[in-house]
Image (cartoon, rainbow over all chains, first blue to last red; front, top):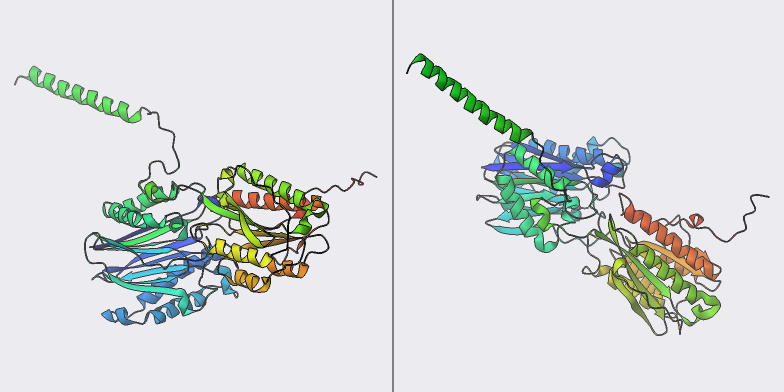
Amino acid sequence: MLRAAGVSVTGPGHLELNEDCQDAHSIKGWRGGWILAVADGLGSRPHSAQGAQVAVRSVQAVARAWEHSSAWRTIPARDVATDIYRQWLKTVPWRDKSMGATTLLVAICDRDGYTRMWQLGDGLVVSVVNGRVQVLTPERSGFGNETRALGVDTSWSAWHTSDLVLGRSGDALLLMTDGIADDIPQDLVAGFASTVGRELKKRSRRGARQWLRREFTDWATPGHSDDKTLAAIFVE
Amino acid sequence: MGWASMNEDNESRFFNATIIRNEVDRKMNTSQPMPEKQPGGSTKLKAFTAPQARPLPVIILADTSGSMAENQKIEALNVAVRQMVASFANEPRLRADIQVGVITFGGRHAQLHLPLVSAHAVKDVIGFTATGTTPMGAAFELARELLEDRERVPARAYRPVLVLVSDGAPTDDWETSLAALKASERGQKASRIAMAIGADADRELLAQFANDAEAPVFEAHEAQDIRRFFRAVTMSVVANSASPMPDKPLTIDMSEIPGDDLDLDAI
């Protein structure tokens, strides 16, 4: 059985400044599978929190408009990215769209576990398939908080995509913002992903959300300040 | 079972149940001494998170050519850099771990005078010696290599700060090296600040290096201006490192550093 859970936690930096969480996520059931979206509004932009909210809603709107067939698997990834971007541009109210610039991570899976992923900008996407952990995000070259985003980058080459199948118990796909990803050393990503997958499996959706919230609120890296969002699909 | 026996049995059951219930209530409602909470102390994911705050690299490109020996410029630079490192070392690393590296260019080569390390780990900065020509292009090259080295400047690092101080014109091929530094993915994102020392400094070049449109090339007319500049850089870096958002671009405000002007307001 395919399940999903996720949470967004406001970072201490924003709490200190009495600012809203600039991350957003959306998890909704879809034809026996799930549509997951995670967005991280660029802190330097005045409306990034709303931009992130609109981004995750745009993903849901685009995917729900697809016809009821397995044809969604073959829609070119570029077309999907274009549709999501257009939907976002259409919905954000500002003339200067960069005021709501945001990253976007998307995962859509059907009842058979066939899963497609899109990523624009920072954050980390990790899969666990047949016990093998794979980082689907290419290595980043810039610094913390330097990123490509909706509203500032219109090139298709800025997107990363991947297709996979989540079929066996223990398989999982994790989407997380850089508030989490930047504090996980590369050699510990596999352990992190496996542990999260295992712990989520043990809990109800509500319990999983509570566990994630507790972990990210009480994050161990000294001086962490960023918002933290993680959304996951996993096979029970 | 007789009536009296049944009553006794019921009473006994009720009494025992009450005792048990009271015992449970007492256990639940008695406050237990809680262990002091440590950040991440009891989380399952603690084992997978970085144990250090994100680094905030500060890289100084210091002109140590022969002309810096005049008018106590090199002495002032030595004092200023030492004070800066000492100030960084006193910071509590709550939000960011300030790291310092120094590249000197004087004589035939540029060299990594102080490798990029946490300011807390720096025992002393060996004094600069002013000598020879001004291989500034080689310093740009070294700075670019350092920034691109992901072992020394990891992706989780906050936006680095590059500080260039010079009193003359480069004597090597600097244009290619500066262009490469500015075009590099990480070099272009760093905060780049420049100070011209004295009248012979190449202000046009320094302006090309700096990337803050609101901050002009800072000027040092005398040795104490070098110390003031480094104090301003120190204050700005420290303020950023302790702020909720340590990644914002560095802004330098020299007006916050008192000069030695006479206080004539009282007249």
